[in-house]
Length: 339
Image 1: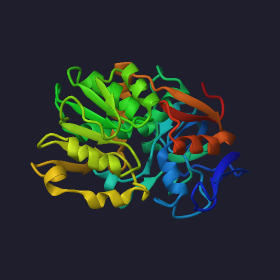
Image 2: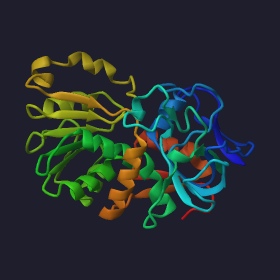
Image 3: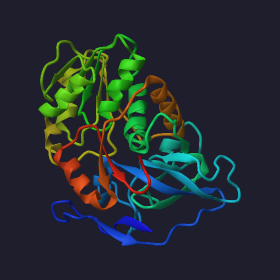
Image 4: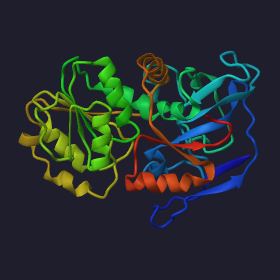
């Protein structure tokens, strides 16, 4: 089968084509696993963190990709949840304990980092961590729901907002554009403010129903009750903490932050950024329960991701565009038989 392989850790600047298209054997499912013929796989910023070593794979080479859509091609002899031909999706959680805290368990295994993922024509996964995909989504639309959407759903829950509270979103890519639509559905009276550097992203946010948009450090009409940060940078953290109202909560939805502007955190001021019972919360991975619930809510709400589609052998191009901030919605690889 064809697969894009990560063979070494390096910055994209030093290694402009970090993934290599190779022919590798089709994997065989274990007793409790299914074999998936992959049709589409979303491109996530976490792949950049893997490639550049901020969250490195424990073993190389590895097949990245954790927003996977495909059809069950084969089942292990103990599989009871899925049948051959079922359309399923796989997210960042490849395997864990199955309990409410499986996302922070030592047994957590990440798809596309700790085990081969979806930048390939086939992959295997434990049957518990493959999810039925609602018929209303095409393969390409469904792919970003498995991580960008599901982890965004978890972040939104962690804000603890109520209907009518003001929500801020800083960064507006694959996750942000889904969280905005989800917030408008779950909290219809909640104003949503979007902070983004790109004028195109701010325009896109208005199209999707944002109440106000501005640059990262701009002052909004009112102080938000909560802000979700989906950026890889540190500047938005300081700006968001300064912007929060007393008792507000910042939820950082990023598996890693990059070091480029880390020195800015030396400017943190207790009175300005943290006092008056402001809170800071991080999102650690995602659970199978989050993914199942998000797929149901999204289907009921009629939410549709906006996607840009690339061939499997264009994965490096998609990653470079993601790194450069050329994002409108989510990026998805077309791998085989998708729609």
